[in-house]
Length: 81
Image (tube, rainbow, N blue to C red; front, side, top):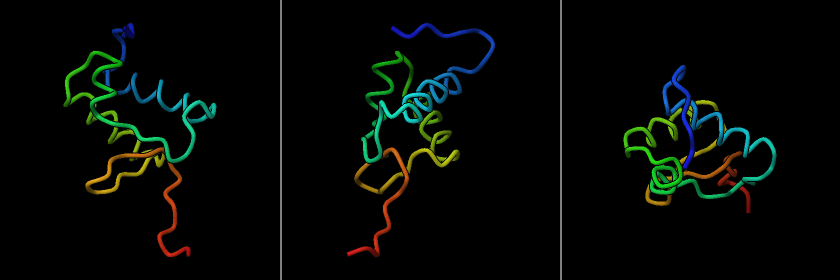
């Protein structure tokens, strides 16, 4: 299980880990990031996972589609055919 530090909130530490995965290409564009997977991998409550996902979205690293989930960005242009 992930070992958290005491100097930052857990959700911010999760954001850092996932951001590194995205920036390294380990998690490519379009990859699903589910709240459940975050809670299970990091051993945190759902609220903490939601805050991490929101933090990633606020940084423009992921996007969320209603009824589909959150995905590594960039968000595709829906107008393309």
